[in-house]
Amino acid sequence: MTLGFIAKGGVLVIPILLCSVLVLAIFLERVIRFTLMRARGAGLAEKVISLLKSGDAPGAARMAEQSNSPMGRVLRKAMDYRNEDREVLETVIIHATEEEVRGLSRYLQALATIGNIAPLLGLLGTVIGMIKAFMVIQEMGGKVNAAVLAGGIWEAMLTTALGLAVALPAMVIHSYLLARVERYEARLHDGAVTFLTALTGRK
Image (cartoon, rainbow, N blue to C red; front, top):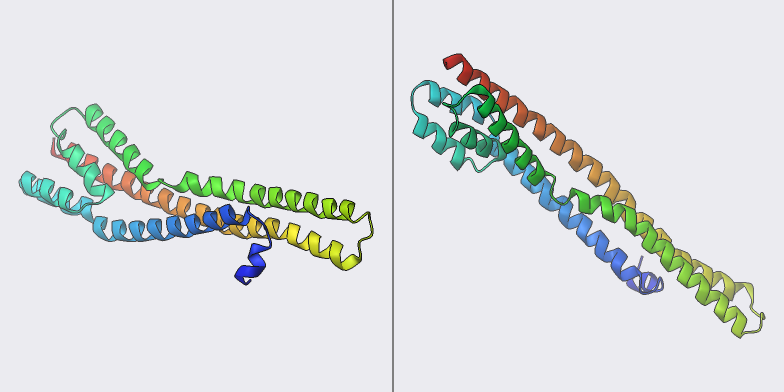
């Protein structure tokens, strides 16, 4: 589609296109972030546990902190309470994990919202376009040929097509990123359980 072709859709084309830019920006930001986190947090729980077992608690804390990853932050908070009762440690780990998951889920609600409102914006644009088309018909006294009527209708339908073209990728991307968040959440839980089990075994 050329810019001139898209411009025929009316003023509501602008927010629909802005939605598409937001979808792309969120997708790229989240993918890059998840990729970096996976590399930084790989095998971190086992390395931290190994240092703790060797008696190097400061080194373990430093490794967890310097990893700059969700797993590292969870483990770092857990190490501050490693000498507390198991129930206290479990509570700290659960809260820390939930906090990291909220960070991982950032912007996903925005994607879901865009997926919902983009078709509605398109539909609104179509309704407005149809109103304009019928106003033209009324002004011409009903003497409108098929070409004029068809032109008004396809221009009105253009915003619906654009809205759906934005909404469908937005929903697919939302589902994809949500699945990645769930997988990373599972890894956080696995690492936390491994850490907790290792500490319990030491007591």
